Picture (cartoon, rainbow, N blue to C red):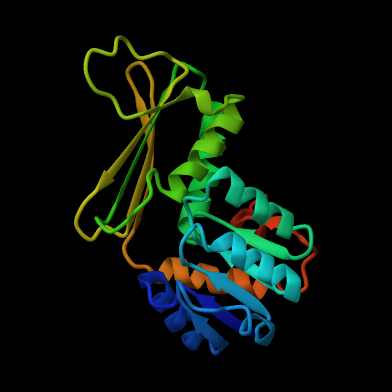
Length: 241
C-alpha cells in the first residue's frame, strides 16, 4: 500500500509520517496547504488529509476523479464543505473521523451506552481541552460525542448550550452543556459528565501523544483499501458497530 499525506508539515502530518515508516508503509508523496496535490494523488492507493477544512473538499474531488480512497482527519468543515465531501463519497470510500485513536472511539461507544441507560434525570455536560494552537471549537471529537449523545436520547443540536455567562436562570433537563478549554500543550482531553441527583458518572479520555491518532489513521488507510464507496467512521474500522 502507498499513501499520500496532505498537511505533512503540521504536527499530525509529521506523526503520520513516523507511523507509516514504523509500519513499513510506503509514502508516495507529501503536500501541504498551498501545494498542488492533483498530480501526486494517482501515485497513491490512499490519501490521508490533516490539512485545513477548506482544503478537504477540493482534495476529495481530486481523489474522486482519480479513484483513490481518502482518510479525513481535518475538522471544522462547514455545511457546504461537508456537502462536497459527501458527494465525493458516492465515487470513493472515505473514512471521516474527528478522532482516530482507539481509546476515543471506545469512549464514543461507552458514552452512547450510558446516554441510553441513564434517563433524563442525568444531565449531560461535555468538557474538552486542547493546546493553544487549535483553531476550531468545540473539537471534532467533542462534536462526535455530541452526536452520539443526541442520537441516543432522540435530541437534536438545539439542546446544546455552548458556555454560560451572566444570570441565565436554572438549567433545563434537556440541555447539553459544551465547554471548550484551550491552553498549553494539551494534546486532547475529553470528559462527558452525566450528573444525577446524589450521583455522577464521568467518562474521560486523555491523549498523551499524537502517535495514537497517527497510528489509527494509518490503520484506517490499510482497512479502507477495496471498500465500496461510502463514508465510514472509526466505528466501522474497529468493528464497534
